[in-house]
Length: 396
Image (cartoon, rainbow, N blue to C red; front, side, top):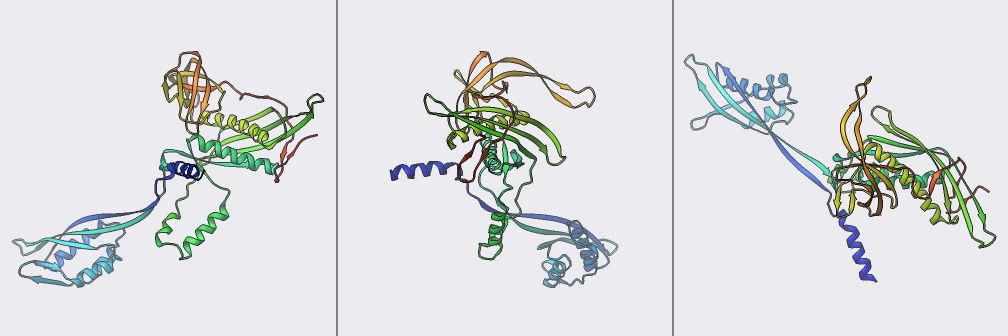
């Protein structure tokens, strides 16, 4: 038994083996300058000023007012002394760390021509988060509103689960601010390693806000006189929107009202019913933002790169020319030609498999839900509640 538990721990740990680390990067900026003067010192000084003027963040007035000490040797020609190096560093606030005087020559008129190269090396550190980069996915936050506190809390977690399992979004947390503040305080306290500070300041802003409101919920039960078994009929109505945060545009909006026949009022049946509602809504949102596409065809099975509901049915289409709105000139979508229908037969956390029930579909076809999830139909509005202790308040 212990060996089995250890194996499970190892297997579950595989997706998280990518290590977080602090990346140190050093970049060097090179700048060249030339100057002419009646003395070597003046020519070099002007060349240095020209080179430094090309380095971002250096103030020319500070350089011009700096005193420069020069020294001459028979073998090396003219070079900057340590005093000169200190003057440059002082004038540039330490932005220059090395220099070279390439040449100093004198023309027929007695003027000196100097050429210098100045280098500025910059070292930066940044935190590299473990796992895949967040750049390839859009970000979304899940926000619940309205009454039914416990029901809202349960639905929020299930919506988060659904979006995470779709592997299409960076799902951002907005519920645990106090815990983040506690960890931030520890990192800044001086008790953590110095490089831990680079974990701060990496939070993502959201692209989309998924906002849902439970407008009504109700449940009623009856006990069979013959079998003595309890049967529960629940109704639930949810308004939901997808809002583009940057512009506050409502990109998708809908209301789902469902009836659910549950075997009894046990928590397992209640959660199973809520799972089906959440799956239906998340699939609608995903279809609006990321239309479902056939990722591959393996034998008689169609493969999708996300978890779908087993038993769900879809229509599939091939895509044609892009159509533009005659008034707004916006692209409204592509012409779709129906190629067939499919049914999901099995699913894992990352992949789903379907069979063709009608027509002939191919890799790349877009698939759209035929509507509803097995066991649900559109119904009336009403009132339903989950209690903190795990009980169910039925409407009777």
